[in-house]
Image (tube, rainbow, N blue to C red; front, side, top):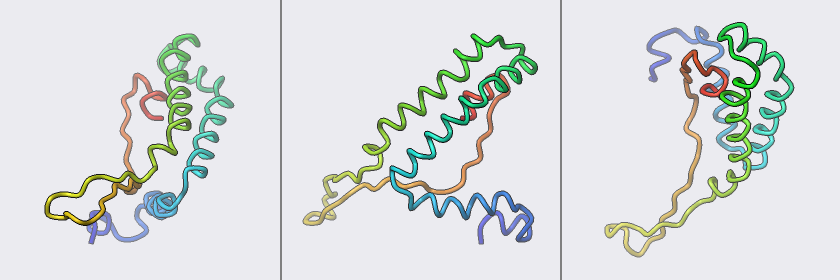
Length: 130
């Protein structure tokens, strides 16, 4: 029994349940699928650039130049960096076995673990959330 089922009856958190189901599918995705999702995120951020500017100006009184420098450019830069390096990050790595496991082969395989709650501060809402 996990924390969700102890705290609330099934169906109480439909969004979380949908995310948890999707996390299982995403765990099996390859680099190409993940890169496609990152490119989609990049397109969405760029497509909504004007709305982001307006929201940051209304909520935090940030001018466009500051919004670009402190919010959008770091996010877009990290997306592009991740796209460039993702395949290498996902590769299984051979490592030396421990003394107790001598005569065997050991590998590290990186994989997503599940749903994550992101709590972001108010002062850099786009940058620190994405």
